[in-house]
Length: 373
Image (tube, rainbow, N blue to C red; front, side, top):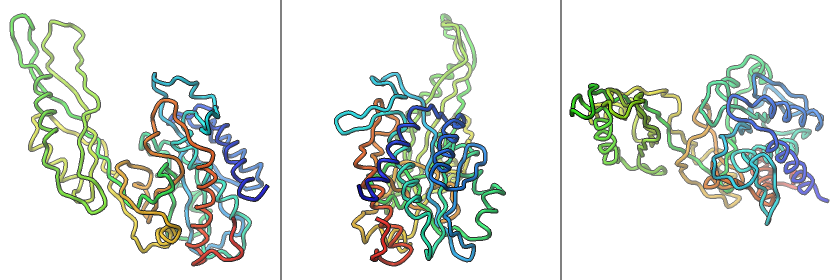
């Protein structure tokens, strides 16, 4: 058995353990325990803040820059469409099924195994930090955003600047060099209550429907070089009415706005407010569009390995990083949040190999005779 095969076996075993353990956003404590125990078993000292677990390479040198390897261990909740037990890892027809296997358990264990391969190495041009973080699926504040400001994390860096990151998400091991921003807007249409039988009042539902119809033709159409046009999608709608014969005076709905790099969030909100009657309130301006320069060593290394660049329509923790970050990992984004989610063990093996070669090239300029894999 070669080194790559051994790393893959460990990675798949860890992934199965993570699948068996529910880890919904804000409830990731048990999987944080598993990740901490795994690092201990591998002889790697680690740290934990809230449900975030991180470790540095053995020969960390604060005079060198640092590369961050990051992915998340929280999951969405399984839908009713699952035909398999979402918490029972099942290998079938070359696939490993289970909730979070693809998003983002597979990318996470791949990056952890990559870190394990580099952990004891001396003479690296960069430090490595691996971080398994929480609350990514809800864009929460206690995940990567908390970690990057936590005193224990900053103390471990000892002043070493993070000059780049790999954010583990399922991209088929291609390079998502840019990604859309996410602006979630709470909308409230106001009407006037009345009796349905007497045609009284002003129906807030109908007012909301007019705004929703306008959203389908909204003019956020500036093209981007790497990203698609902006997209607005109404995902939730409700009134507080319980009686069938009362015209609702309020109707609340949520608008999911995917924003490209041609708009600011403030500008988007202004355009929406000008075209809609409903009251609009943005939840946050945190998840802005991001990109990494094509000349960054991580991107250049990926290009040398035949990886291609693209703009991602989805948003990740990359949006919360104040340094260049490349989104990349095994698996396929199309499988994320779907029933009977799966990843191929072969994708994990390929991912470990590519990540090790990518880091080797990014840190040393090329893969030499002392290559990790």
